Image 1 (cartoon, rainbow, N blue to C red):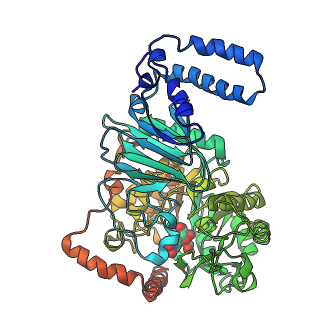
Image 2 (image 1 turned 45 degrees about the vertical axis):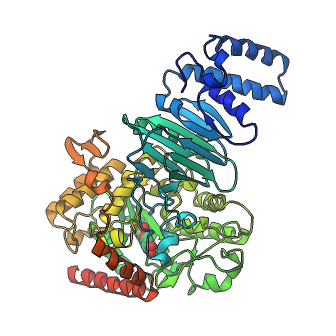
Image 3 (image 1 turned 45 degrees about the horizontal axis):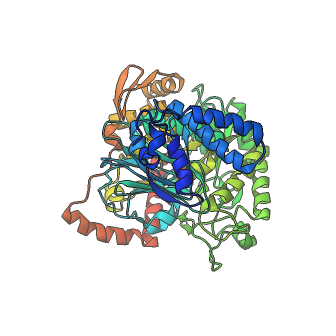
Length: 612
Ligand code: 9PG
């Protein structure tokens, strides 16, 4: 522990001395390391004299800069002693280097360890990409690994999928006994945090990197973390969150030109800024030209949308390639492969296996650049780019670089080619997208059901579509708001074909109010007049919001409690465990996925026809 009179700089000096160029577990007890200095009162005077001396004598000498660094660290440490959370001083920290930060410490090291002298009740896991689970979980509870296996590349970071201990991408946190949290968050791209007993282990995959270690009020700690992230990666540029009509959650793949033009006309004066065409317009995943359902072509559609005063939006999954596409046949050399030359699986969807472009291949990058310029030239100024995680999957790339850096390089090319268009990333690795997109999907898809017990409990999969899954993960990603506009997915106003209760639909809307990102796929033809008016005021209003508890808010004067939605599903009973073995096996059969896909396509088509 660090006592009041003892400058915390000894922590810094301790790191320098205890671990010159290496790593060591260092009990943070400077008094025991330097007993004389600890109570000598020289803590401030020594560095001032030395500082002046060093500055005068050795301006450009490398060793001087090191000493200077330690002394400067000392001054800052001395000042923040009063504000640093006392818990920091009781930790055992292992890192190559440390320096103080306004709300904690900045640690450096490819591997770090933070051991705390208490037993946390909760641990914050943070998912790799938009759809991956983020939540506070009971660290003692062992979760089954998620199924179906074929979908996992598109739901979680596969590298860490076999990990049984609680873990998450880039960051981890525990609750403190007296309230507040202890957070360790990476400031680089390829990091992971695992909880092992009372130690949080952080590791960078490919190199050394920095970490923020902060303690205190959850909101304050995350605010500091986002400031640090912003200084490294930048932030989105868009001024105000858009209000979007998106075609996916009503029509799904069954869009066509007429259906969309009818909706466009029906939207009337509802205050949507963006009319976004989702999946279903393209010839194939990889062949981004209009299919037969859009006989006038995508440029004409954009012109019709813009004629209503709205921004034309378009969905693409630009990094994905399916075997039935011309792109797959024509450019097999652009695809990401593993060490043995086999194609890397990016999951399974559209009744086909998914593969991905190698975003370090110069010709693939040129193709991406052309594609983005093409859709801009068609007139689309809002792009929802989806399934982006595929660009960051492990593999052997044309240029040897860490997978997240390779992804970011691809996204950078996309960003530049899109110019001033609004870029919404979806299914995207979180940290590697920061600074390059305007909006980011921060949870899995919503759907008309609250929760599928089969998916979340039997298959232990909380990345599948469902209102509760979406709310849970989004609630644990609200901290991203200073960095990027956060899209929680659409809300519902209609009452057809939904099993959501009124309360559950309201909760989705309140989540959108927290995020300030408002979108729906509701067809005006499906809405009663009162529902139209509720939608209109939802889009127009800007209610005052205050947080009153961990998951409690006052929104426009109403108390809203998200607590139940944020909880993890209940464990399986003995009998359910037996059933789960069978269901987990069945879920891994491709024909089952295809069958479910066909059944749901048919149900959607029926609903559209029945409801006009
Ligand atoms: C279009 C949709 C919508 C939606 C996106 C994304 O197979 N899967 O694992 C899978 C995951 C997500 C998903 C579709 C399939 O949804 O989030 O808003 O654009 O793609 O296909």
